[in-house]
Picture (cartoon, rainbow, N blue to C red):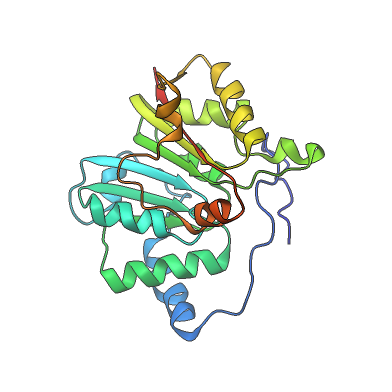
Length: 232
């Protein structure tokens, strides 16, 4: 099922179907118990994002469309003093992440199971240290390019919520989307590409665990680009 654009938002439908195979019993339990406990309440204004977490956090990071959750879980384990917000509308992916969060007892993860633009509009200004957009849906048909998450209006959202010096990290194996992202970010006054040479964007991010999407790209003979932009 494809989300219908909200009439008051200057955005398109950034994701497609919401659910795949039936959830396993353990996954369904996680959705019933952990999702209500960890889901952001975007109807309630928040002044300090750090207050969303039970233990003190030094940095705040948002991952948009976390897929199977491998990267988010890896980073949350690796950085226990960073608070992570993961946004993913696909039910099966959310269920997988919550299962891992429950198994590992991670207390530095919060989630949202709908449109990431709602979260971006709710977040306080200059509240995030990093935004990750990793292997997003490339919407390969030209007529669907307007649905790509990287857009002028969403880069404005990124610029509003990123702290000065914060980073927007993007990864994709689709050349047209990589070029699209470079062009859009080059045209945004608040973002600058940090690459100094080709190896900077051909080398995975520090501590990169890899993802199943990346593995699939490798099997199909596609290389990836890893782009980092700084909020100026």
